[in-house]
Image (cartoon, rainbow, N blue to C red; front, top):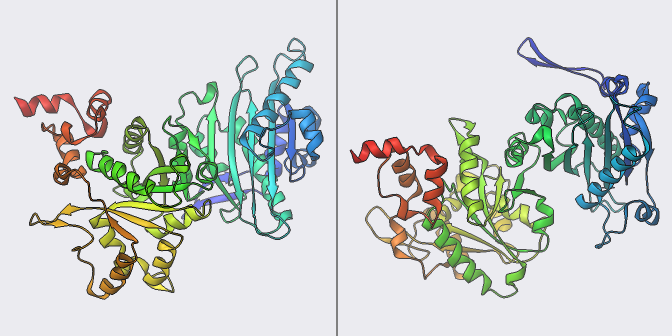
Amino acid sequence: MGTEIKLKGDKVIEQIPSIKDKALRINLNENIYGTFAEIGAGQETVRHFFRSGGSSGTIAKAMSAYDKDFSDAVYGVESDGRYVTEERLKKMLTLEGQIIEERLSREKHPTKLFFSYANTVATIDFAKQFKGHGWVGIRYQIEPDEAYNEIILHIRFKETDARLQQETLGILGVNLIYGAFYKYNDPKRLLRYLYDHLDKDQLEIDTINFSGPRFADVDNRLISLQLVKNGMTDAVMFNPEGKNILPAAILYKKNLLALRGSFRPVTKVNMDMYEKSLKMFLEENKVEKDNTLVIFEITLSNLRSDGEIDERDFMDRAELLCSLGQTVMISNFQEYYKVVEYFANYTKARMGLAMGVNNLVDIFDEKYYRHLSGGILEAFGKLFYRDMKVFLYPMLDDNGVLMDSNNLKVHPRMKELYKFFKFNGKVVDIADYDPHNLEVFSREVLKMINQGKPGWEPMLPSGIAEIIKEHHLFGYHPQKELEQNA
């Protein structure tokens, strides 16, 4: 765990302090003072601070309320009886922070920066069926008279040994505390520093939220995007209010209907596909409306422009989908079967995918599955198991012919495979679509917006054109419109 050096060619671009050096720097800062409360995986973070030396000026208290009854007596009883939750973590952070404030006089300690660090974790079980996960967070000050900031994250362990998971947790905790105090002015870099002396095959971070005065300008959706971009997790989600949400919590045991697209911008086609496929999905056996979640998914490759992710463009799309009351998922899944596999980690209930004819034809292209030992058959085994159905939206081909599940063109070698899924009801047509939408293409709408051409507004759902104009999204500029109309 010594100092690491990052190289670019022969040039040293960054020196990463060792975990001991990070803990020591915190300990030697006479103003940083707080508590450590760790549940479920030993006192793995605080031990680094004890061992590095000089900890008496930093550690006000270290505790581990392992026993559930004792934990309840300290932090209160959870209504759902669960302990590894965000709600539990927040209670821990808040209570420990209050205790410091109550017991230490600000008059006596005018320069102290108080903090509370906490984690509540379940490591791998004896049967090794559940690898373990946890919530980790810090609540802290940068100035003595300033309101508290918070960084809260959810982790999933990838190692299959409890002791290794404990060590990983301890390293992550030190990285978080160090980053919170010394890298807070650049949250994106702080995020990367959480993996100092760790590897991505040890740990997954699938949710993180920054709050407080120092992070007032941070959009947590953009931070979520970094998690996927940096390979820290495969997918992130946020709700219609634009808040990051834990995928496991929202997907658990749900019936899921997913729509993949670029949504650049979201058009009437997208919303017609959503409304009609949802209606059909809800008519399926074992699908209950109250237990159904619709997800608008954007893949990372759909966010790339000239090889780089265009964050502004991403935010434009997210804003519009959220304004329509939708739950959004950003993933790095290229193939559809990986989306279904991901959902299957959290639910055994029915799933559906809504898509256009072009997307389905692509699914039957062998080139996407050459990396699989079982090729396209392996992919389709993963895609269509567990009652999964495709709800197919028609399209007009170049000759104006309506294409649906009955006359779409797949590669000759794939014809019999396609017939099999079609015959078994795995591909069903959306019949009551709005025929006016077949002339709407998002790429054409985008071009019209960029060039200031008139007539694109009616192609979008109600209220969306107004948002685009008000916030100048997707390159919209009123001056271009004036020039076109002149």
